[in-house]
Amino acid sequence: MQSILCAVKYEYIPCTGDAASKDCCTLAVEQAHLCEVGEPCLCGADEGDCDDDSECEEGLICGSDNCPEDSGFHDTHDCCYDPFAAVCDGGDSCCTSDYPCGEEEGDCDEDSDCEGDLLCGSDNCPAGETFEADDDCCYDPFAVTCDGGDSCCTSDYPCGEEEGDCDEDSECEEGLKCGRNNCPDEETFESGDDCCYEPDMSNRESCGLTCVCRMF
Image 1 (cartoon, one colour):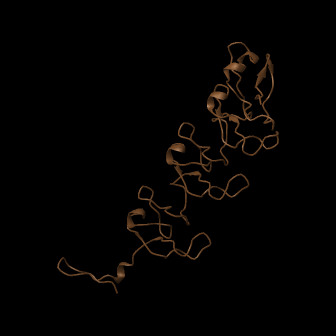
Image 2 (cartoon, one colour; image 1 turned 30 degrees about the vertical axis):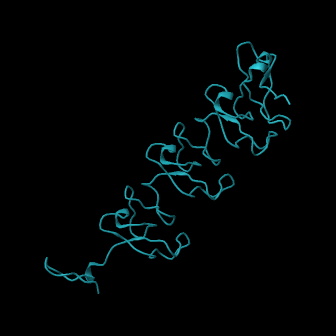
Image 3 (cartoon, helix red, strand yellow; image 1 turned 135 degrees about the vertical axis):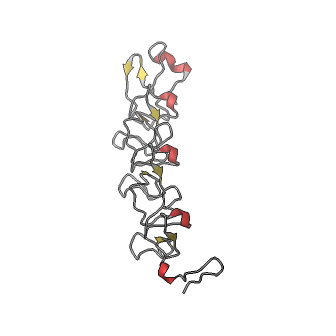
């Protein structure tokens, strides 16, 4: 079955995910005569289904399961989009190192998918219709309060008192230690979460170099 093209005999025809078409955007050489001479048939923003960036107009890239819901597309159709104008509010790997995401945008896979000093979190996207529970979003490690979530505290961005989850003392701010199953009893923490705490120095004996300190 012949694919629908984005342009036919100079007449522009939007690609709206017609069910009869498996590939609206195409660069097929044998079909080039249907397009303007010397020009490939490329899709514009919110048009598809595309398979790779080469099937999109200049400056656009091919997304993943991102076509508009109200334009006759299936939920598995991929559409061309402007990565600089798009807001990543869901969709696998919407954020990339070439087009990094801002705060609370996702889904990201690694820190390089996020702008500047932002980091890629884990299952931390805002609750809403567009994000799934396991989507990962970019966040500001200096502004976030770690009130749960595996390995929220890191040695590069240590946690304050009663913040977690931490794994070792180096993931806590200076003078604090990482506890064990000691986080505040709040909805955001799980029973097995470990939080940073300030050790009670009054429980230590004042020892010299030759004695062994004990905890009471």
